[in-house]
Length: 323
Ligand code: AHR
Image 1 (cartoon, rainbow, N blue to C red):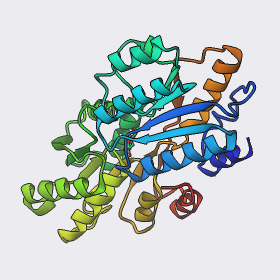
Image 2 (spheres, helix red, strand yellow):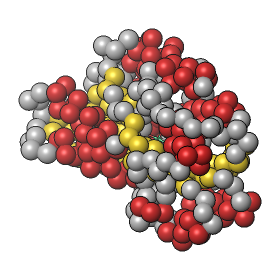
Image 3 (tube, rainbow, N blue to C red):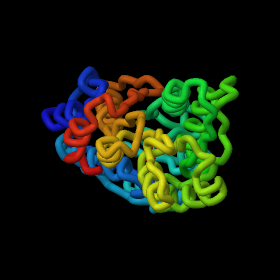
């Protein structure tokens, strides 16, 4: 358990894993992991942490990178079922379209754990879901902006995550809930940046062009830090100051957003732990070895960070975690 503790504490995490009850361990178990791809720094860290925790626990992890395609995830899951793995982890790229393949896993008696994104469909198709409360993440980001802006008139632009993914749907909803009834805060433009830095930059360039060179934009809300970092570059290229002329608020808490805070170019982020695997493996251990059925939803923390929260220290604490 040493490495897991180090990872959990090193990332400033909740201790969710540390409080989990362990049964006999997962040594020698074969677990398939269908990962979405590597669209963001956060995703890279989740992959690194999952591999590191699996290695520490002696799990034979079968890793499949779906390169952002649901069809590749479905193929990988079918492959894991054919191999007769002990369990499957899946980070679902989009929320719909999982019933058939997860029914096949269920019929093969292979427990499935959802990592970091949710699905629409019957809850009995998966053992548990380890994820943040994504509506809350959006709300925390929105509430920060409401407080930062006060009574000032503020036009906000939004960079959404991957279309049809649960974080894109829920983070939008939560943010809009926070802005509801605030007549001075208006969401003027919203478009997907697909959770990538390059698309975030490209879409922000379009927003700036359409909004009088950025003069009509007071804040950008990005569904992840990578898109925010892309937007920051677009703002600088337009001759404006990110963090001052245009406020920047986003989600993930990756090292690069803390570097941007140190430079005065980002204003707030909401942390998403990359350690989804720790709680997932703890739940699988208890289930496979002792028959203990976990909570259906294991919710990770959503802590707000601003430049007042030692961004240099947060950068240093995270930079070794595979982001
Ligand atoms: O599902 C979690 C989201 O997916 C992260 O916030 C984003 O960076 C990633 O691509």
